[in-house]
Image (cartoon, rainbow, N blue to C red; front, side, top):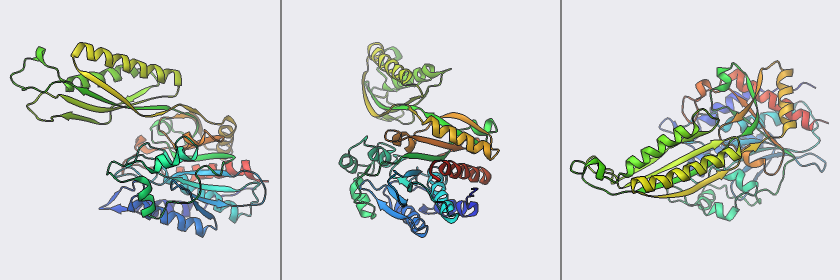
Length: 405
């Protein structure tokens, strides 16, 4: 049986959700915010209109379930609808709305699946307001205690649990109470590889491990004009050395390293910094290599203390091991793409995704569609309509292969 996505409906919903929660022209639908509530309300409306049973768990994850007779665990598909500040409209939302389109297409065509199907929209995937990122799926997969997550204080001093209750999305369902038979996430690539290679689709075979750390360096403040260079204990200079070291550490390898935030004190033009605080984001698809990078950074910081006379403290903010996705589902994705005469390459995901967490509890895979110029987390984020439709269609075909009687 050939079943097709309602492409016009999918594209329309992406635009509607992309305009939900905007303020002054910017899309900033941060987790558990008023804008997030607006997005959730719109999603729930669509889930109910599709005839799905809506559930909200204690961490605020939203699910739409197509229940069918039988005792098989459901196939879950989805992603997230929270965004970064001043975001594009496709990150996460594409996976959720594609999943909904898949179920609607199957119901319309009279498909009789051998198990239930679920759409999942996970809370706080981006981690902008509350840490860590991918929190909703992490809690769902048992990697973080629910009460501990609800007690997390955001960067605006709000408490996640209180904010979820305020916006009406503190549910009763226990996270993880429904363990799916498999989880598939469609997503924009958020990188330049597919476009550069003129590939229409990616079958994601693995996902990089992630190590987030905060480094604090303390030196000595002094007059910028009267203190000779060789007599300075400059925390700013020490921070710059770390940044340069990290670039050299990962050059010509699969690893990547990023210092994305930095703060100097006392932050005055004519005062030598006595304080530097910055974050380090290390990633690699191989766990042994990632550990080696972490060790190399620690050794460099120890040597920096000795040579520059500064004191250094390091704190782990988040640590996730690399994930290998289910080979059988990856193979089905490739076969479905080929059947539609869509070029497809196997690839590694450089970003973290909810699928990374769900892989802890069930077979998992991802479908990537191209991102123009690799841009994401930016209003310029763009994927052509044809690619969005093709990715959703392959998601549908893959789901059909798994659940059709």
